[in-house]
Image 1 (cartoon, rainbow, N blue to C red):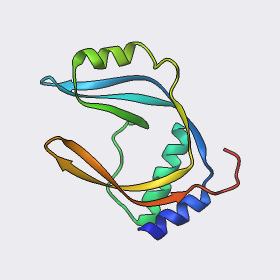
Image 2 (spheres, rainbow, N blue to C red):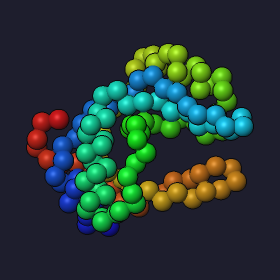
Image 3 (cartoon, rainbow, N blue to C red):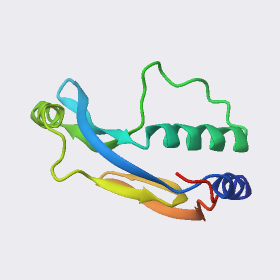
Image 4 (cartoon, helix red, strand yellow):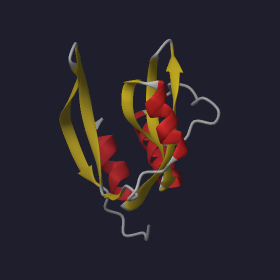
Length: 128
């Protein structure tokens, strides 16, 4: 898997991401909240599709309308979800995506812990 990640990372340029307004979903008081990706969504989608192809993942199609996003809270309150949907973060949250990182999630009672297993820089010279 790490070789496949390296091949994809070498073929794609680094790119910029900016987060915008958010939203969420609440079920029985236990919701999830996120911020949408305003800039960089196409690049994230291309990266994800390239990685899926490279590792041979055939997990099925994504639900219709699903867009790249950043999950900011699980067990989110309806108030947090409403606040995120009203106002984009100020100042805007932005960063340069310059590497692909493979993580292992360790689920615990206190929350998830993430372990870095592999890193691969995006190195193509194509302009982002």
